[in-house]
Length: 318
Image 1 (cartoon, rainbow, N blue to C red):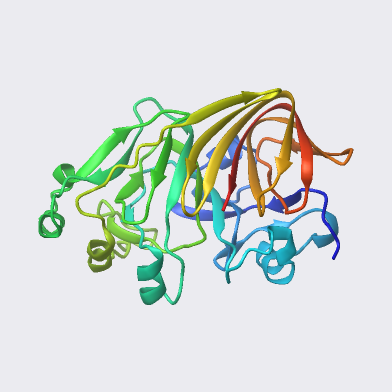
Image 2: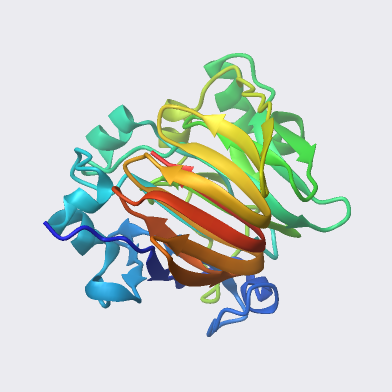
């Protein structure tokens, strides 16, 4: 077995969305083809869009192929599918109000797909920007009636957001990003979304997008449950580590590196996304440059390594 002692760098792919914009180009320098680019699928093995390795011995392989053929890179984790999906979302307009199923419901109703619990780190937000997070109904009956009557202003809870905020969004939570918000999302590897409300918008062909009212009612948690995030901040030589969440599906951190910081890779794998700055990862004396907009996986077995430079990363693992 050949031990990989280097980061696995990934080429992201981009998804056009009715609510997308151009910040993935202007903020991150990505070569997007459309001014309606809503999503950067940065670390993905999902069939609807796979990242491709762009360095080392596995260059040209998809992340899905690595998961299938070289499970040792991922600590020999069990499971049919790579568990996580990292995205950057540019909400140039309001996203549809939506809710995601849990594993059990998705497995039964969506051809064995995973459920979708996710979380958001707010990279940037315009003045006064907000999200929809939760609802005000106290019973399923009330929830259903408010949807049927179109009482959206009374039903939906709105929350102001700013750069640096973090939200944990379990399956069953009614939610939507609103215009002017740029986030990094860590989620289960699922593409199942039930639209509750879409502002009666039409697409380029003049058609309203499909809603999924019955399934939305099935899976929504009623009454809404808040999941307060209490970040834990620790300092070490050369870095400040903020732990946002350590939950069933993922743990997510922010690393602010200023100088040179030493780490140990003792997880099945680590996902890293550079949101600001530049620097390098040093493994066994070999340096690998990283900069804003770069996404990588540190595979199992790396052991001790250093991160040097001035940079901000969001880091996650299953």
